[in-house]
Length: 167
Image (cartoon, rainbow, N blue to C red):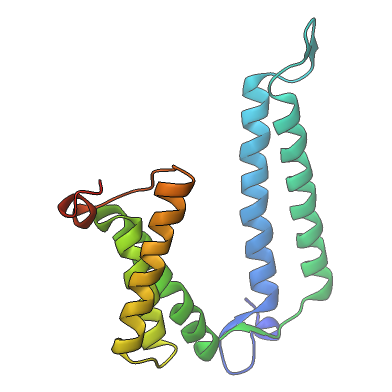
């Protein structure tokens, strides 16, 4: 990145992020387009072939990505998009969520939900454990009732549910 486009004080510029986003969405669009081609596009005696719609959607995604890239190149916006302060804010949001996803596999969704909610309440909300733990457990129990009992949609369970005879 040239000095002209480097944000003052360090960090990642808006220009760099727009180019990266355009490249990422363009790659997804290209993958969808190739998948559509592999499934077949066009018409046969029964109507459109299975890859016609994904192919068209992929082309639209690629076109949108190219539009984003052109806009970024024309504006060359070098303002700060992400610096140390903003990165810490993103990590404070993303970190607990990533932990929730990682814990969902070995512990199940209900226990991971209780831990996530209680943890976020304590670490980010400043609540005390004596308030956060009952809320986390209450929400997990409510989720159990809604999904397992009322909607009869079984979700991922872990060892705690098995120990309680609920798995």
